[in-house]
View 1 (cartoon, rainbow, N blue to C red):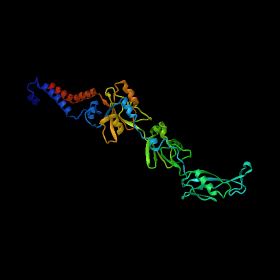
View 2 (view 1 turned 60 degrees about the vertical axis):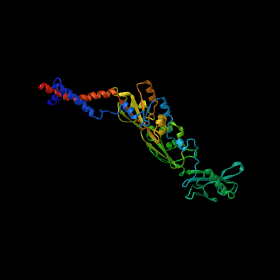
View 3 (view 1 turned 180 degrees about the vertical axis):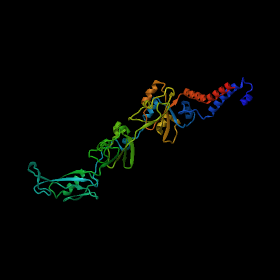
View 4 (view 1 turned 90 degrees about the horizontal axis):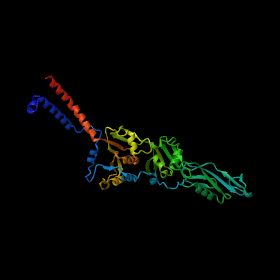
Length: 401
């Protein structure tokens, strides 16, 4: 107190000087703080960090508008049809090592080479036939047919094998006719593993099997469709897409080919919510498609006493082509993915319709900034916590003198 009296001798009294000093001390302590406790940047902070006058920016700040939605519709997502050919014809299945064949040979005439028991009696001309024991394709790619010898069948179709056997029997059998069927299919299979009821090697049928057909043959998926991802690997190429995309886009339900591999995994899509929302957490989509306005609702909406409805932000990394279309000449060059901050104004009714058409993506970050008035209130509250004990102590000390 003596120090204050000596520094401020002209004030009304040393008690008044003490209160002024205490207040100044409180402001000084607040000024010494790096910042007032906060749950994230204000709208003005993000605007300043964006550096609107700079040639390049640490991120692109984009207002959500009809033009923004049109650009996002041009996004080129991973597509099985584009990578593996959605309009391709079913593959022509060919025999391989380990396959097994059933062979039946018919002959006409009175002196058949293979059979003596008549099978049919068309117009008085007896037709006799025999079914050979099951023939497996050996490691040399051949099968054995009596009187025809070793027939190479690996890499051939059933029709080609029938023609080859018939040609080998000409001059030995009486007008031979040959029918070949596949009894065991090992070379024309697809491997299915992961979140399916019955994984394993699934045999392809001659008419062609699409991706969903093979999944059905494997017993179907075990997880909800909106949490299931499909990875197709073929000839060293691999692509992973959500199951919902295959169901929404029939072109991605491609024909599978021998030796294809399907990996079915369960990975729920999610986004994270921060700031002045009712719920700060990682939130699962629990649906195939979630819009921005639905994401805000899942996060508990905007808190009345804290949120700035002009400052609803959605943050994600976009492909460079999308980022360039959104940002124009300010796009960062030589960057595969560009950080983009989308801003939504929910003080306008149109903002709700725009948010309804804005699709969320896995890994998105939703942030709702606090209102500037809320920051002022926190400042005053913090100031009171710092100065009030000192003021009460000074008043008590004064009353005791």
